[in-house]
Image (cartoon, rainbow, N blue to C red):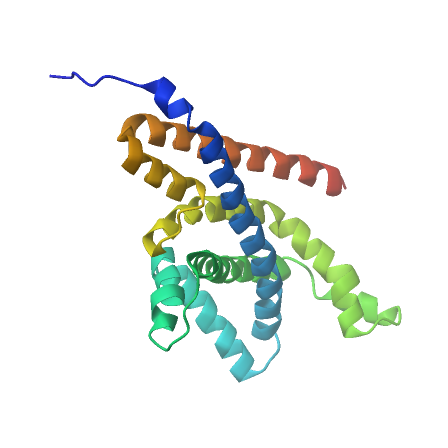
Length: 221
């Protein structure tokens, strides 16, 4: 029969430590998104460069990122590179794995966004005396980011949730890792992980809300 005794007070006493872990979770997610966006722009340029080597490299990155588990990518950063004598901290391995994943998904989003922009935009910029790079920077890229903005916010949510995989490589400073350690100390599994789930839920909902507010502010026309 159900005879579990809840101890919410004991679990809530650990809330400050869990919130500290949530800050680390956000740190990893935000850093992986910034790096992922920069890499995705480069990958998109490679795919559209006309160079077989660059296009093949970008396509391979995207295929691996989109068709293998994120856990595999984190493992390769931590244990795979470790096999070659490159030993990374759990934080760095987690960041590299999530960044790799973000870059692959965002590159495909950017490529799709570019296809939605007429080629005449570049020609119009060139007719005004712009170079191809200037036309891309000032005309095409703002439109591309506008089209891809909401998918980018979804990827940010995914990055936040992916941080929980860090525990598999010894990460214990993020929200999930802190919760796991506290559970080992207190054995209040249900209460602690319920609180962690609520924090994750709150972070992702706030992220979605902020992204919609930003989109409404930046892309009013």
